[in-house]
Length: 361
Image (cartoon, rainbow, N blue to C red; front, side):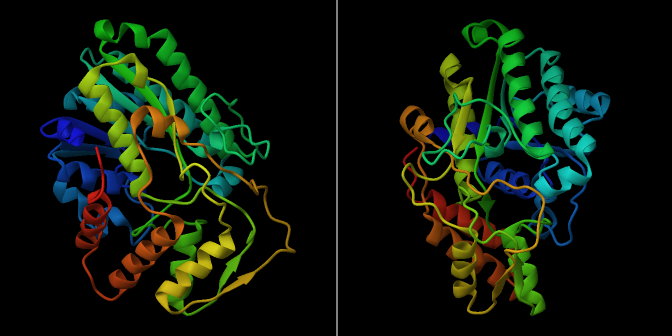
């Protein structure tokens, strides 16, 4: 199995206390990696990092802001990572309207500080920079955005991710040219995923955490954009893509993989609305209801957004395992069992086992 390449490797995850970061650390630990983390403390209570006791699985961790370039650089030098997954970010669209400077500073300059630290590392390292599907200039394409589409973004969050992608491309061309990987040793890629869901997310202004808070408090869920379409996927889907890409980068050293990649739903998957997602989620939970607010004027959020993962499917051999119905069933069961007293780490490991059962790489 190609994921065996992580066994014994030093892997640094920034943003390791976040939803995706904590799931990634758990999976890497299961693969035998020596996992290190750099992040601010979790910003919700509960959170997956604490509930699943991710801190017990780490070789080391540093509490810090990704914008603190001195602390970040010194920690990276101390870890001497073979691989870095950069997930530390300000991840919320609506928060970016109230704190645009923090959003750009964190998502753009934080990424630059990390890449600059890699420049001074002085050893081979495979770096996967995680951005967002919202990095693309959204013109309402029905067929999904491809890696060659222009960067853009209406709101500060989306624009910050587009800027981060441009910064990654600049550093790759200027300092880590793929054609010279054998000389400088750094393989630098960027990845964009859809809207991820899964057990253990309690962030603000996300549809599934909002649904969980509503059903556990006995109140209806208020939905502001029931007809919005997003590339919904379980958190393990893009993480499997990140891992596969990093594994191929480490295993081959090929310039082919130092590039931008989409990891979204299956090609030609039917679009699914917010309302349909919540109906499925509450049907599995066997309780909960939603009410739709289509009249109140809200901050701008894209009404339609899809990704094309054809490049990842054809070049990497990556493919999505679970469709939307299965994703929502698994996610709802995680939360339902957690609130019934089940152990968060055991629930998460069971999902990883189920997901990898039919993997072909």
